Image 1: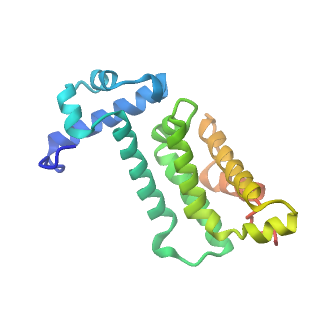
Image 2: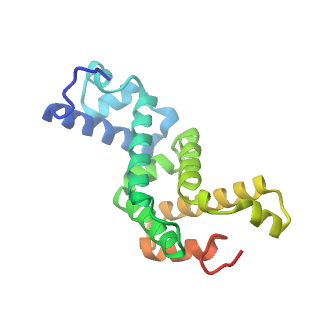
Image 3: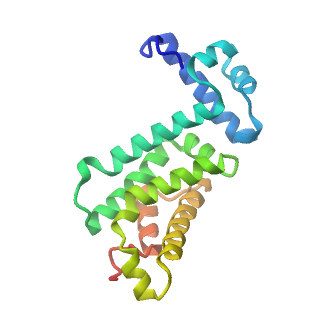
Length: 195
Protein backbone atom coordinates (compact mmCIF):
# COMPACT_ATOMS: atom_id res chain seq x y z
CA UNK A 1 0.00 0.00 0.00
CA UNK A 2 1.34 3.47 -0.83
CA UNK A 3 2.37 5.56 2.15
CA UNK A 4 1.15 8.85 0.63
CA UNK A 5 -2.46 7.65 0.25
CA UNK A 6 -5.07 9.54 2.29
CA UNK A 7 -6.86 6.66 3.99
CA UNK A 8 -9.72 8.94 5.04
CA UNK A 9 -10.46 10.05 1.48
CA UNK A 10 -14.00 8.99 0.51
CA UNK A 11 -12.83 7.42 -2.74
CA UNK A 12 -10.11 5.45 -0.97
CA UNK A 13 -12.59 4.19 1.64
CA UNK A 14 -15.16 3.27 -1.02
CA UNK A 15 -12.56 1.43 -3.10
CA UNK A 16 -11.26 -0.36 -0.02
CA UNK A 17 -14.80 -1.51 0.79
CA UNK A 18 -15.32 -2.74 -2.77
CA UNK A 19 -12.07 -4.70 -2.75
CA UNK A 20 -12.70 -6.32 0.61
CA UNK A 21 -16.32 -7.19 -0.25
CA UNK A 22 -15.22 -8.72 -3.56
CA UNK A 23 -12.55 -10.73 -1.78
CA UNK A 24 -14.99 -12.14 0.78
CA UNK A 25 -17.52 -13.02 -1.93
CA UNK A 26 -14.87 -14.77 -4.01
CA UNK A 27 -13.43 -16.73 -1.09
CA UNK A 28 -16.97 -17.90 -0.27
CA UNK A 29 -17.70 -18.86 -3.87
CA UNK A 30 -14.51 -20.36 -5.27
CA UNK A 31 -12.06 -20.44 -2.37
CA UNK A 32 -8.96 -18.51 -1.37
CA UNK A 33 -6.52 -20.66 -3.32
CA UNK A 34 -8.46 -20.35 -6.58
CA UNK A 35 -8.78 -16.56 -6.68
CA UNK A 36 -6.27 -14.11 -8.05
CA UNK A 37 -5.93 -10.32 -8.23
CA UNK A 38 -7.65 -10.25 -11.62
CA UNK A 39 -10.73 -11.94 -10.10
CA UNK A 40 -10.80 -9.46 -7.24
CA UNK A 41 -10.44 -6.38 -9.45
CA UNK A 42 -13.11 -7.61 -11.87
CA UNK A 43 -15.56 -8.24 -9.03
CA UNK A 44 -14.73 -4.94 -7.29
CA UNK A 45 -14.80 -3.05 -10.61
CA UNK A 46 -11.40 -1.45 -10.00
CA UNK A 47 -8.19 -1.49 -12.03
CA UNK A 48 -5.19 -3.60 -11.08
CA UNK A 49 -3.26 -0.39 -10.44
CA UNK A 50 -5.94 0.74 -7.98
CA UNK A 51 -5.81 -2.65 -6.24
CA UNK A 52 -2.03 -2.36 -5.89
CA UNK A 53 -2.43 1.05 -4.27
CA UNK A 54 -4.19 -0.82 -1.48
CA UNK A 55 -2.51 -4.25 -1.36
CA UNK A 56 0.59 -5.96 -2.71
CA UNK A 57 -1.33 -9.19 -3.46
CA UNK A 58 -4.15 -11.39 -2.18
CA UNK A 59 -2.02 -12.50 0.77
CA UNK A 60 -1.57 -8.90 1.91
CA UNK A 61 -5.33 -8.48 1.61
CA UNK A 62 -5.88 -11.61 3.72
CA UNK A 63 -3.34 -10.28 6.21
CA UNK A 64 -5.38 -7.09 6.56
CA UNK A 65 -8.37 -9.20 7.62
CA UNK A 66 -6.19 -11.08 10.09
CA UNK A 67 -5.03 -7.81 11.65
CA UNK A 68 -8.58 -6.47 11.78
CA UNK A 69 -10.05 -9.61 13.36
CA UNK A 70 -7.18 -9.88 15.83
CA UNK A 71 -7.58 -6.25 16.89
CA UNK A 72 -11.38 -6.42 17.05
CA UNK A 73 -11.50 -9.67 19.00
CA UNK A 74 -8.75 -8.80 21.45
CA UNK A 75 -10.43 -5.44 22.06
CA UNK A 76 -13.83 -7.08 22.56
CA UNK A 77 -12.63 -10.07 24.55
CA UNK A 78 -9.97 -8.50 26.72
CA UNK A 79 -11.11 -4.98 27.60
CA UNK A 80 -8.57 -3.66 30.04
CA UNK A 81 -7.29 -7.18 30.77
CA UNK A 82 -9.99 -7.78 33.35
CA UNK A 83 -9.31 -10.46 35.97
CA UNK A 84 -10.15 -13.93 34.73
CA UNK A 85 -13.09 -15.49 36.61
CA UNK A 86 -15.73 -18.06 35.68
CA UNK A 87 -18.27 -15.39 34.70
CA UNK A 88 -15.62 -13.64 32.63
CA UNK A 89 -15.07 -16.85 30.61
CA UNK A 90 -18.74 -16.96 29.64
CA UNK A 91 -18.77 -13.24 28.84
CA UNK A 92 -15.73 -13.64 26.57
CA UNK A 93 -17.31 -16.56 24.73
CA UNK A 94 -20.53 -14.57 24.22
CA UNK A 95 -18.50 -11.63 22.89
CA UNK A 96 -16.61 -13.92 20.53
CA UNK A 97 -19.78 -15.37 19.04
CA UNK A 98 -21.50 -11.96 18.97
CA UNK A 99 -18.61 -10.59 16.90
CA UNK A 100 -18.88 -13.56 14.56
CA UNK A 101 -22.64 -13.09 14.18
CA UNK A 102 -22.18 -9.39 13.40
CA UNK A 103 -19.51 -10.22 10.79
CA UNK A 104 -20.98 -13.49 9.58
CA UNK A 105 -20.17 -13.28 5.85
CA UNK A 106 -16.53 -12.42 6.56
CA UNK A 107 -16.15 -15.07 9.24
CA UNK A 108 -17.82 -17.79 7.17
CA UNK A 109 -15.59 -17.05 4.18
CA UNK A 110 -12.32 -16.83 6.07
CA UNK A 111 -12.91 -19.64 8.56
CA UNK A 112 -14.89 -21.93 6.28
CA UNK A 113 -13.72 -24.84 4.18
CA UNK A 114 -12.71 -22.55 1.29
CA UNK A 115 -10.56 -20.27 3.43
CA UNK A 116 -6.78 -20.34 3.81
CA UNK A 117 -5.67 -23.11 6.18
CA UNK A 118 -2.58 -21.22 7.37
CA UNK A 119 -4.69 -18.15 8.20
CA UNK A 120 -7.12 -20.36 10.11
CA UNK A 121 -4.32 -22.01 12.07
CA UNK A 122 -2.81 -18.64 13.03
CA UNK A 123 -6.20 -17.33 14.13
CA UNK A 124 -6.96 -20.51 16.09
CA UNK A 125 -3.63 -20.18 17.87
CA UNK A 126 -4.30 -16.51 18.60
CA UNK A 127 -7.83 -17.01 19.90
CA UNK A 128 -7.19 -20.01 22.05
CA UNK A 129 -3.63 -19.05 22.93
CA UNK A 130 -3.94 -15.39 23.79
CA UNK A 131 -7.56 -15.30 24.90
CA UNK A 132 -8.45 -18.59 26.59
CA UNK A 133 -5.52 -20.98 26.96
CA UNK A 134 -3.48 -18.60 29.08
CA UNK A 135 -6.03 -19.21 31.81
CA UNK A 136 -5.89 -23.00 31.70
CA UNK A 137 -3.37 -24.86 33.80
CA UNK A 138 -2.51 -27.49 31.19
CA UNK A 139 0.26 -28.96 33.29
CA UNK A 140 -2.09 -29.49 36.25
CA UNK A 141 -4.86 -30.87 34.04
CA UNK A 142 -2.41 -33.14 32.26
CA UNK A 143 -1.20 -34.58 35.56
CA UNK A 144 -4.76 -35.11 36.76
CA UNK A 145 -5.77 -36.79 33.49
CA UNK A 146 -2.41 -38.61 33.17
CA UNK A 147 -1.75 -37.37 29.62
CA UNK A 148 1.05 -35.25 28.13
CA UNK A 149 0.27 -31.52 28.37
CA UNK A 150 1.05 -30.77 24.70
CA UNK A 151 -1.50 -33.36 23.53
CA UNK A 152 -4.08 -32.06 25.96
CA UNK A 153 -3.57 -28.48 24.81
CA UNK A 154 -3.91 -29.40 21.13
CA UNK A 155 -7.00 -31.51 21.85
CA UNK A 156 -8.70 -28.69 23.73
CA UNK A 157 -7.76 -26.02 21.17
CA UNK A 158 -8.86 -28.14 18.20
CA UNK A 159 -12.13 -29.13 19.86
CA UNK A 160 -12.96 -25.52 20.67
CA UNK A 161 -12.13 -24.46 17.15
CA UNK A 162 -14.28 -27.15 15.52
CA UNK A 163 -17.28 -26.17 17.68
CA UNK A 164 -16.75 -22.60 16.49
CA UNK A 165 -16.56 -23.69 12.82
CA UNK A 166 -19.62 -25.93 13.14
CA UNK A 167 -21.64 -23.05 14.55
CA UNK A 168 -20.46 -20.76 11.72
CA UNK A 169 -21.53 -23.27 9.08
CA UNK A 170 -25.09 -23.68 10.38
CA UNK A 171 -27.91 -21.82 8.67
CA UNK A 172 -30.01 -21.82 11.84
CA UNK A 173 -27.47 -20.97 14.49
CA UNK A 174 -27.90 -20.64 18.21
CA UNK A 175 -27.70 -17.13 19.63
CA UNK A 176 -24.32 -16.08 21.02
CA UNK A 177 -25.69 -16.68 24.53
CA UNK A 178 -26.97 -20.16 23.63
CA UNK A 179 -23.78 -21.26 21.89
CA UNK A 180 -21.74 -19.91 24.81
CA UNK A 181 -23.70 -22.20 27.17
CA UNK A 182 -23.12 -25.17 24.87
CA UNK A 183 -19.49 -24.25 24.42
CA UNK A 184 -18.82 -24.08 28.14
CA UNK A 185 -20.66 -27.33 28.83
CA UNK A 186 -18.48 -29.07 26.26
CA UNK A 187 -15.31 -27.41 27.46
CA UNK A 188 -12.91 -28.66 30.07
CA UNK A 189 -12.53 -25.02 31.13
CA UNK A 190 -16.19 -24.87 32.06
CA UNK A 191 -16.67 -22.96 35.31
CA UNK A 192 -18.77 -25.85 36.65
CA UNK A 193 -15.87 -28.29 36.37
CA UNK A 194 -13.32 -28.26 39.15
CA UNK A 195 -9.85 -29.34 38.11
